[in-house]
Image (cartoon, rainbow, N blue to C red; front, side, top):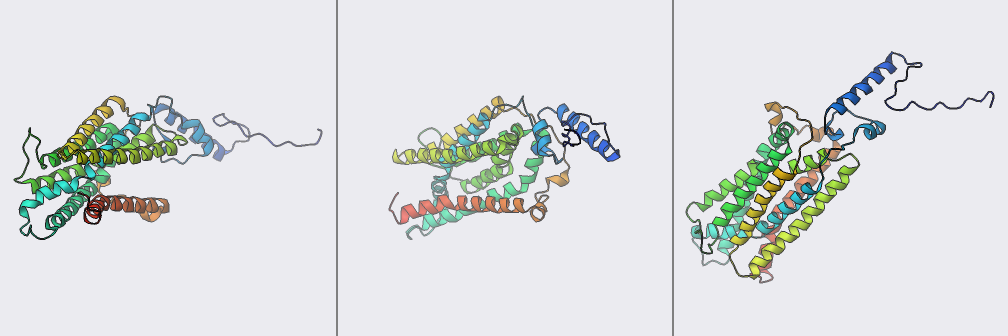
Length: 332
């Protein structure tokens, strides 16, 4: 209609708009084109790894990963790890009872061995947690430089060492004898090694984020959580089957060891790192290097509190549940 002014449609993202483009507009356009070239040149680079804050339009343009590997190997890794964790978690007190029994002088006192085992188990958890804290930041920056696969393999190798030595501290079923001399210190060593080699969740969640778009990432993280819960249930059922069969709980730990060996094979064969590598300084490997984020990011502070409470309750769960079942429910 004559005399009517229609709103002008915005230019398509990525197209050069030369009309009425001042110095600031030209700078913005050049920035967008530079980002486009940067993201296009980095195979597998993800918005989640970038420090550049992009709009929703820019996200839809650049956060595409056509060559990303499937997510099922990561979900299967989470499931299998938690199967092994559930199988071992419910029987750790049995290991501790066998280890501390020779050192308890008042064995005639009711539950003296169980009380000593609970104390020893708490110290093992403390050693594992402290060692994990020492290398927590280093594990993150190492995975950025060397990829997620080697870090995940190292974490699973720590579990193999931990579970295998714990199995040898339990009564034998005829092949390899039981470790008795020095078992007290051997378990401190194995728990420390498992902590120093890192928590499996660091590289697992980072890898899942690497191969996912922004829209896919929450759903895929939920898959990992579902696999965790399912795996813990399956591992507990495995430990229960061993207990009902009246055989040595060494089988539970050997099964957990074999599962972690299988996870290592799965990671080596099926995982494929696509994230760009990033170098680090030793200052970034300081375990307290990221604490300042708790004061600047409220969401990170809340998430850290949730992780702490979750780990705190999980570490108390097994020993408290076993003690309750044996003391009040008369379940051996």
